[in-house]
Amino acid sequence: MNTIRVGVVGAGRNTIDRHIPGLQAIEGVEVVSVCNRSRASSERVARQFDIPTVYESWTELIEAPDTDAIMIGTWPYMHCAMTLAAISAGKHLLCEARMAMNADEAQIMRDAAHENPDLVAQIVPSPVTLWADKTLSRLIAEGYVGDLLTVEIRSSGGTFLDKTGPLHWRKDFDLSGMNIMSMGIWYEAMIRWVGEATRVMAMGKTFVKMRKDENTGVMRAVRVPEHVEVLMDLACGAQGCLSMTSVQGLINVNEIILCGSEGTLCVEGETLYGGRRGDDELHEIAIAAEDRGSWRVEAEFIGAIRGQEKVTHTTFDDGLKYMQFTEAVYRSIAEGKAISLPL
Image (cartoon, rainbow, N blue to C red):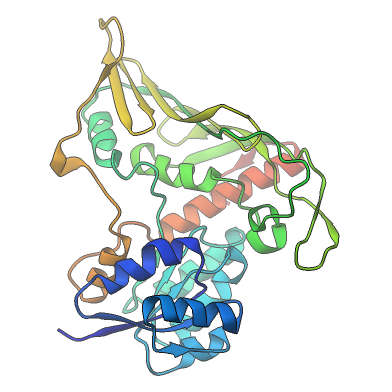
């Protein structure tokens, strides 16, 4: 078995908690280099994981001959440039979500991946429903709900509005682009069971208009909504509603409701409920062990490089779909009108 050598650009929390340990746990895989935002933080990660080489710049790491694959763990503002550089250097790549700043960048990334089919290009997937995706898809396909009529997704982190906090990178348009809270994560999960939207109409609200940039001390405008409501028409004929918020204190909810002509499915946390016409109430639906999905991102990436499997979670094609949805929502809020998909 040939050793696969991986270089890491950007070592944030998810990279440290999941990707580096996940890669190092695979036989025949070595994480050989790292480049973070500063030399000090790069060296700290290198010491923590016994990574032998620290590079001063991300371009140097990607172009160096000591790697076969690149893990991109930066914020979205660098994803497109780094993806193109990795593909140009002939390297496989695993890119942290969200895929890009906007749909145009995602399209460029997707096209570059298609032009180089010998290279594995994978986006870190939405993890929220991995455990239930297969069962949800099967039940809908088997007709459990009949004709699907409505899809509702609601996500609230349970926190009150922070009026004085600094400008977090997720609220910084220059770093996160058109990505809004966990909206893209939930939409990506949704298209696994019911497919894409064809039209969206959205309203969003930013309650704190200015926040302090911790790096510069300068107050900057906040351009990413803290609360959003999205209505959508789906290609399958259903109507959807997506509600995301970071300002509802004590309301910690992650809920999916799929209603059809003959049945209802409901996901609350990590429990699946269902009921059909004639039932008095919803009941818990057990998920068979062989159907219960789990996090295997790093294993799938390496398996795809070795030709043992195909990337399913998540392809650049699916990443483009959720980035087009993300931009459509952002544009709908800004323009006050419905936006058709695909863009």
